[in-house]
Amino acid sequence: MESGARLAAVCDILKVSPRTIQRWRHQIYEGDQRKKAAEKRVPANKLTQSERGKILQICNQAEFANMPPNEIVPALADQGSYVASESSFYRILRQEKQLVRRGRAKAPVHKRPDSIEATGANQLWSWDITYLPSAIRGLFFYLYMIMDVYSRKIVGWEVYSSESAENAALLIRKTCLREKTTGSPLILHSDNGSPMKGATMLATLQKLGVVPSFSRPSVSNDNAYSEALFKTLKYHPGYPDSAFDDMDKARQWVLEFVHWYNEIHHHSAIKFVTPGQRHRGEDIAILKRRDELYCKAKDRHPERWSSICRDWDPVRIVSLNPNNELKRLSRAA
Image 1 (cartoon, rainbow, N blue to C red):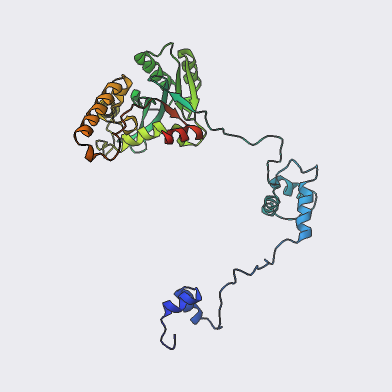
Image 2: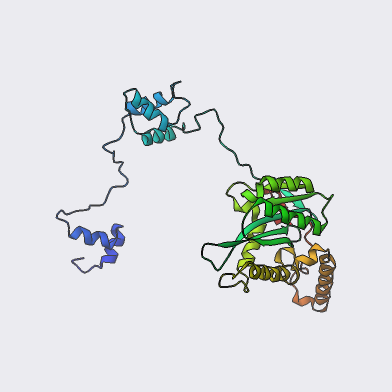
């Protein structure tokens, strides 16, 4: 640098930052003060091999075999012995691959829900609850919404002032009556909230012949259809910027949204027909007319088509929580 080299070029060669060079200039000692990361520095307080061996020996004794370190260390203290801290016990057990559940109870296993397929309407429903803001700070309205997974149609909804299994049971009864699902196999999927698993709700499902299905705890992907529906709802251009004045205003807005979603909105996952059309079985004729139209357009100007006509075949099977094999088949299709 004294000969005219720029600081940035020097730092690039030395693999240090300009700020490091500036700091070195203000220090009383000279030379390269970088920490030698490649050199293994031994901490002054590191446990010796004999101490590590003693910790492992203690943890594997019959007296302590079923106890975690946060119980072993206090027990040793009561015996007048201190070997190391709980964190040291945990660290050494982890390094020796012995940090497992030390009791007889097995670790909880949250198995991925079984894949469920729907080949028609009113075979598989998904439902959830979301918040709607009110004019009073800290007070919310609760939107209960049930979707048919096959058709994506909103088959049932209601806005209540609270979350409860009783409200959920009332909604499911009304929805089953409206859709005439009595006597037909129906699965209702939800997350693990208290309204979903309340005794009143489960008893109602059993009485209606509806089979409940639940997500894994804290895994929103297991109920992806309802989560996506709520995102569509809250990012809709007509969603109010301010809070709802009262419950009637909230219900009126949701009513208009449900009509738009079911009868006007062309859903991309079902070949751009409306959920209402698919729910009523009208999508097959609509998609057939589209296919015929595209084929005629290709016949008129084949030079404008680089491949076959657009695929307008209706989606025959919809899966909830598909396994890897179903995902592979779906991608291949």
